[in-house]
Length: 397
Image (cartoon, rainbow, N blue to C red):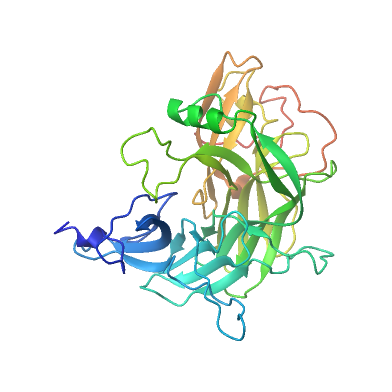
């Protein structure tokens, strides 16, 4: 449409509109960096783009797209590889640079990984971590190589934190949600009346990569088949997308139909060579929580809050008989020493509920190191009696 050229997908003729902007965009000054989906004919396309919104006429530009060759791919028959990105993820950006996950095939990648790029048109991409790289864990074998890398990255200008998997898999069955959009629920129950069974990696981890030194380290790892492991997993599943009966244009090639998606949540902040990573994880007992790790020297992992925590320990205004029932965080939720969380609380029969968004000063935590679980979750305690992971540290609503 005349007068709207700045919003068109760059490099596509004739002028083509974006159809979806999945995930959260990143902001670096007046520049917005985002993932966009579009269609060329009947073929779905994807990419990472940016636009300087301080200049109204400034056009959208591309960092990488379905036309971009995946870097460092092996030669085929002596000729350079020709595989382009089939999947991209929402970027994280700061200081004139962006990081994003790009893969050949989202569900079963053989090429791709995490890439660093200047916020510029068609820049050179620097691979940071790739599918097939050795997993940086103690006693790693040659077979311990990344088979999947998560979409959600956190980047503070030097450090990048990400989720990855390796090794054997095990099946799990996911049941359709009971609450939410009626069209979405109907689509799920019609498509998966007996639940959706998929394979997940037994071994998962949250990792941090130092873009200055090029070193990748494990922050925390899990083993879903080991009851003595500190963590059982970092994946959280949702059923999301646009049902074909919802709204207009549901049949567009670029519209992503509802499906099961998994996410992992972590955030990083650093000062010099030191970093702090906050992440969400499950324990073997079923407890879910937000945990804190620091580096580069190895230190105990700390519990910020989990679903064993009494509500009044977190918030003095919470009803006395409540426990934390849900914890959440986002990739941009850790800035310097401050960590933002969303928490839900309820009593035993869910007749009383509480919740909010809270701010934690991580340098004031009196948390205890995470250890192997020895008992079932404790009953709620009063703030004075609580011997929980935060001591008398109060989260600020």
